[in-house]
Image (tube, rainbow, N blue to C red):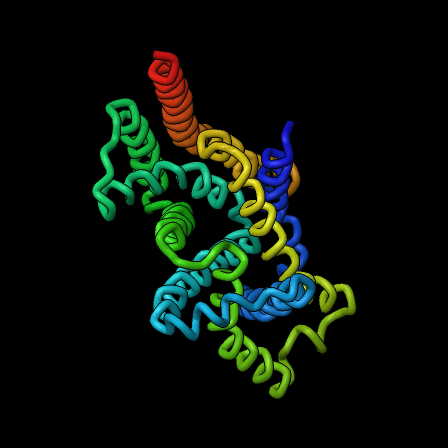
Length: 299
């Protein structure tokens, strides 16, 4: 396994294990955990900038101040994703969060079609159709739309598309995003401490350490992911993506004993089948492209 695969696998493994971290903060309101996550993420990335002595993101912002608008939008989308995830984990719905990240690649390519005008191959449409049937089945069986899965998949896909066209790299982009969210997040935390309901000083030492560590838990996998993405092919990165929701699913079922009855399993089977079609077709397509390119280069 090369370095890029190790970095990417580490990123997805951390994301997959994060439910355990957030579950340990289940007695802290989700919005307060979110504010700590925003605040301490900025502290962590600023420390990295200090070690690297690289403040180029400030120069980019001065030269092109309008990019702050783009990153305010990405920061807002990311905040919705983070809050939904934390709330879902702590309300005993880890399995549904895993469903969101299982369908995330399919939502991502669907948004590519709608927003970027990208063309899909027949097998990709087929995969999206199978996943759609699975989500429809779950909706009918439970009498409600699996909104947690859709919000998580939708916000992360929109975030990915916006960041794909952004001018800053992963670290600089995250720094600007957390900078834009830092002041309101810190304001909320300060207000909670003033009125005596803040969890940092009112809770245990362990709770305070976990809240402070939320910045590392947030930024570290993002940095691993960025390092891995630069070193390996997108197809490989896409396959490794399934590490995270698989770990989340297993944690929800076996660690926290969330219900997974027959009807729910059938819906998941549809989604897993769609992912199998999507992955196999993608591997075949890329192998064919490489073969054709190799023949052209030799001719």
